[in-house]
Length: 149
Length: 149
DNA sequence: TTTAATGTAACTTATGATGTTACTTAAGGT
DNA sequence: ACCTTAAGTAACATCATAAGTTACATTAAA
Image (tube, rainbow over the protein chains, first blue to last red):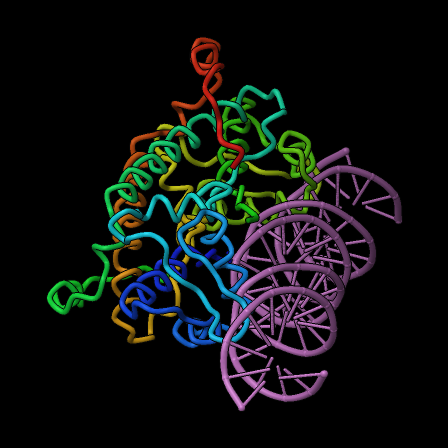
């Protein structure tokens, strides 16, 4: 199923902005993120609405970081993009009153809720400042097997 | 994002088959699951391939349970449908060698792996026999808030 | 031979992020 | 004033995949 990579992209953009410590244009961000400026604007609009960044139109315009990365957690950004559930597992129509279906859905959703709570709790613990480029950290992590998505 | 409800459907079907204790047709299952017989066959084919059920064509044909529900866990069924990741959160292209992107993806995937392990461990603990219709259990669970999916 | 069933191919639909084009608006530079 | 650079946004296409649907082949009992 198609995945939502906006969380990854927004974190990526925010950290680049923090390290550059200047305004950046959507074109620049698009090159960094491997996408085009319209997608960047669309996605960055979520950050702007939440006040984490501002934007300036016209000449010398662009995006500006308005918040220290020590004050933003993965949870904060996930909250901007995570409208629906975190899982690809769906339940069948819950307005059906078949008791078997209810028992099945209850069992599944119980587990998924527990896992979702775990994810969000972990995301709350991770500040964006902790993800800034750090040679040592990256070397440690180099061998880590990352999921395809 | 669109969800995959095959896990829910397969569990639902298996428990109905167990309780009826007879062969059932795809038409019957379709009515129980709220879908049509072709979708049922397509989905049930996963169970058949794994040997949990068998099928008979023609007159008096249909689907037969071949395994006790005490010998099947949610994990077993999830393994049949869960080709990809359990999460709607995706990472951006991992062949990019931007160290920031790597750090971001590593942080996210670390958390998701932990949560996925939790889900699968819980699924291993739940036998399908534990989901059979039980008035008492259902009454207890009635108030539980279930996810929209 | 008729009927009831699975098996399966082919196509459509639904969904939501992503990609793309084109245009509008804003603001600095010349 | 005019040009250029930038965000903002509408409109539409693309992608991926489960689900829905139609049609037909195959199998086997009545």
